[in-house]
Length: 482
Image (cartoon, rainbow, N blue to C red; front, side, top):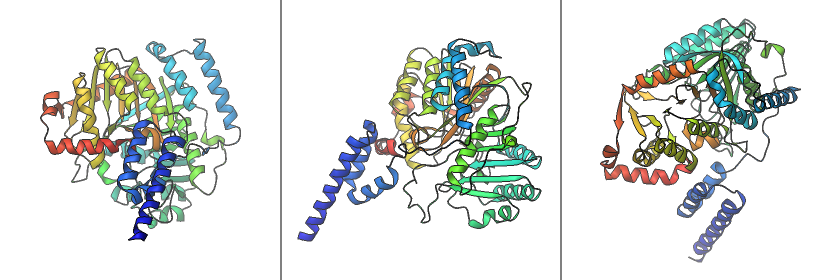
């Protein structure tokens, strides 16, 4: 009996020590602190282990190192563009974009997101069309194919992709395939055998020898990028798997948004991939001018910034850019996200926009794929509905798009969900689009999607069952650490 009492006392002392660490040393925000304290005191031993695995910060260490003179070149470009913005010297193909110079400046300062204006973009909302185009571009590659995906499946689509990549590697094309070790945890080792035998290379992001026992397990590479010959780039929400073609019996039709980009914005995707690869792989990629070809100014007229974010930085760059966009809205805000777990700053921005007369519309999936996140999402809707925000639940399959459109003028499409995990824990990348024509097209897509939704009103929300309220309450408490 005495031994058990002593063990219990020791556990409680450890919990108190860890609680002090969480409160005074980690300097987290209050909601995250209270969530971890609840875990620590309600499940003392397991909570301690969970904190060691899931609660550690990696911001203290500089993970990414730019190659060669890249740091100096990028810093020079960023400083020059910031000076041009301050002096109002940047010309815009779309005159309406002059109103967003401060947003471009912020993204330059916090994310080194160079503004480029010679881009063209094709929008995909259907998986089959996206992958048909991607495979066609891969088959036409001459020098290199660089891929990073969060989820890769060993199914029909996954095997089709790796077979095409192996064929290109056999032709002498450089193929590098980076995948997230946890997102693709079910991927068998044999999946890359044909590619490796043909001369291609693969690497796992933050792997662990023992599954799920990894102090970096909470920090995942959620990016979905493909760069081909430094001239074509893909970015968006589609991963690699048959469900993204709408072949899943559970999800049915898969509704996502992805971009095929041409122009200098591709070079920023390339730079990010090279840094991701050098962080994850054993062999570093050396600079090659063929990775960064000179683009024609006639490629397109779309202004764009590629904003990367991750847990290694002091800023939450994508979230900050979202908030900046929301506060700039005058007429409409159209937001699509599969997961909606905002922090107080985002909730406040959306409420103020709606209370100011802006037509704020949020579209979410009507069916869950992650239990706690789904119910945490619904816990936030009541406050927004009370302040006039319109909420739509997508019923034609599963909505996975990560899209924000402001006034039909500026937009964001990328890999980041609107939740704390994407903003603080995952490595993400979004394309911020400064072009009325492209943004208006994305808004029309949103309006078409609304035809396949039911609107969740304040009255309907108030009549939800007690069990739903209970699920929401529990999930809401855990939302800062989901």
